[in-house]
Image (cartoon, rainbow, N blue to C red):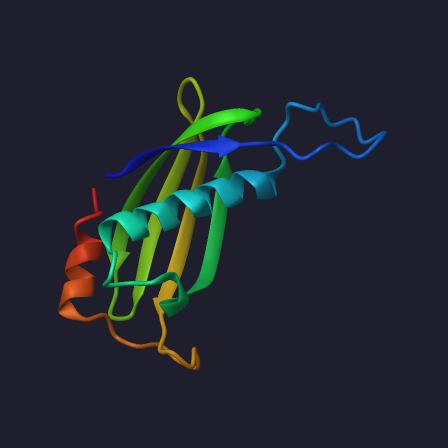
Length: 132
């Protein structure tokens, strides 16, 4: 299972929002999880699967505790490889247990991005190597 250190930087809070400057808003944490997946894709599936050939069709985030500015550890694991889809989980943690688990479902699409396209045997094998 690939593991990465990912930067998490909160955007400045709006004046009067009551949100501490160190608090990371949900969308920033989701972006960090997505970036970890793209890094894993590039490192482990380079030349087989490119970002423009996958379409995000589902995302679900379970926050277990607050994230703060700094860095987090991201664990990336493929949970299921379908005929033309892949389900994966990215867990972010900071100094302890998981703070966020994000489930992504991507579908393999053709160049026109108008429909799904089955994984090749090599693509499937590369994705399955990321399972835990």
